[in-house]
Each structure stands twice: as C-alpha cells, then as structure tokens.
Length: 229
Image (cartoon, rainbow, N blue to C red; front, top):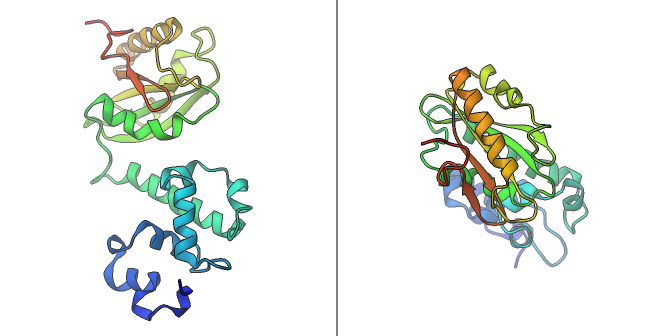
C-alpha cells in the first residue's frame, strides 16, 4: 500500500476529515491522523493504525493500554502515544460533561456498559461511585477506594463525599471482582445496606450497587441484596 503522501490528496485522512467530516472516516483513518500520518517500513499510517486497533481490540483497549508499553511498540513513541491518550481522554470527558448529550442511566445495563470494559481488567478491587443529577445523567465517576471491599475499612461517608460536592441527586456504587466472578459476597451486601441507609439520611438515592466480573455483572438491586422492598 502506498504511503500517505503517495495517496491522492482527496484520499488522505487529513483531507477527508476536512472535506467529509470525521463521521466519514474509518477508525483506522482517524487513528492515522493521531499518528501524524507517519507509518513504518512496510506499513503506512492507516495500516499501522489498523494493526494497533486489532492488537488492542479497539478504542477501549487502547485507552486501557499502559503508556510505556505502547510507546515501545514499533512505529510509536512517547509523542504519538501522548496524542492518542489525550484524544481518548477528551472523548471520555466530553461524554460526561455535555449537558445536552450527557449519558443517562436508565437501567443497570446502562451503568454496566459504562464501567464493564475497563473495570473487568483491573487487578485490584476498585470501588467507584457514579454521581447522577436529577435526570439520572452522569455527572462524574469517582474512585472512592482501592483494595478489598471490607465494611470495616470502607468509610460509608466517603461514598457520598463527591456526590455532596456535586449536589448529586443519586449515586450508583460499582466495584469489581478481579477473580472474574461477580457473585456478591456477604461483605458486598453489608456495604450496600449501609450505603443505602446513609443515602436516605443524606437525601441522595443509592440506586444500585453493581459488581463487575469478567464480561459479566450483577445488579444487587435486581437481586434485592442490601436493598429492601
């Protein structure tokens, strides 16, 4: 395949995004622009981009990938990785901060879809809160605690600290099981019950507690674990 510079002007990714808009470009073409249209011997930028997307299983995999590991890959380097990481972070923040298009949580599946890909890969337990406004739109995803979920270690007040600061109407708790099995433990149930009770006192609804496993999740509200009624 010819290099980017050898392509007709109208077929180059930068020209196409200028004249046709980003929606007209493939994932590989968009990534090629972030790679500054430079490839490696035997592969132009689009082919290199396609290889990266395949190796890391798409955008989500690139977002999760370690900076240093990406930087030493053939055709990469710190500057290119920094551009890719920055672009992905901008996209993530845009999703969370646009009032008109802010993600709205309508079901446990919506919340799980938001968290599953990243949290399923973590090698430690992370406890996070999804802070929601009065329309259940995501305001922020906040990491509360890293380590085994133990009611004697997790301060329930910390679960609501960021929600209070944001004047949130509700929260959803999310934590992962590095074992890959999302079956809730007795400690998970106890923390959930305490969080629900604390939310009632603070007038912030605890809508659910999701346990993330490998490609699976459990909604504790759906299973009535820690939630009454």
